[in-house]
Image (cartoon, rainbow, N blue to C red; front, side):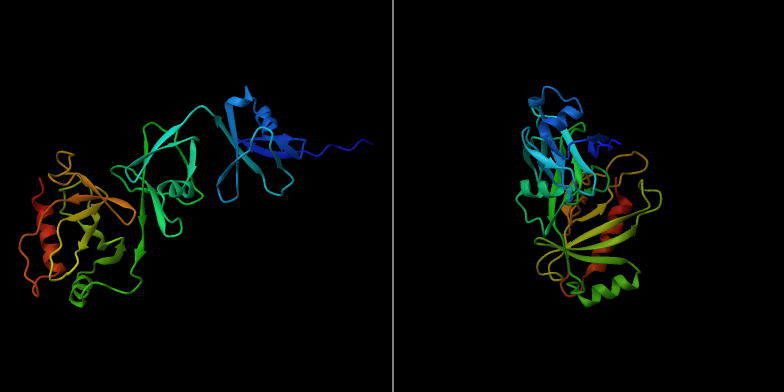
Length: 278
């Protein structure tokens, strides 16, 4: 009785195939999916962590592993543009993962995160092994950030903490690079004024606070005036903090009483600015 020949299942471009050869070349893989002429295509193996490893035409890969082997192909004469932290890059593949993005940006992968910019909505965090498709319309824009929380070591004065707790505001104290910020989660917005009922509110605390006053404030998600569906005046620019692009409200503070004013003063000014926004 003849013995059935063993086959090996692989996935190429999200389609599953069966092959008989346990050790296969890049050229043979391209033949499986009919990519011809082969020298006009590249094929990459998707590794366990999500990284991509190119398989040259004459290079072999062993399919005798318990898990399904995955591969991705694309035309080799294409390049893709992307922007990271305002700098333009050319990338030779339609897919890129978070770790490769960090390496392009020149940041420490262990301490920095990277996000895909989504204008007018919450930016999308890209994990090291998460693939991003660069074939979407437009130039994909990314930004990096070093996210460090205070983990219980509060930099807010005790009076500020007591005031915020008394108002029932949920707050995070976050250090992002040289900036110290307090984020108030779900801060209530004036009823009917905006296209949202609440938003996260960010206040940056300058060096020397509380003797030095905070300046401006920031909200997320971005909000528009409900009646005209437009951003308020001087509130249409982004500000990067903690891996997200916040809506900056340029409302400046020219009067501050050291030893008297605190975060309660700033919040009252924020509430007034929201009430009169136009």
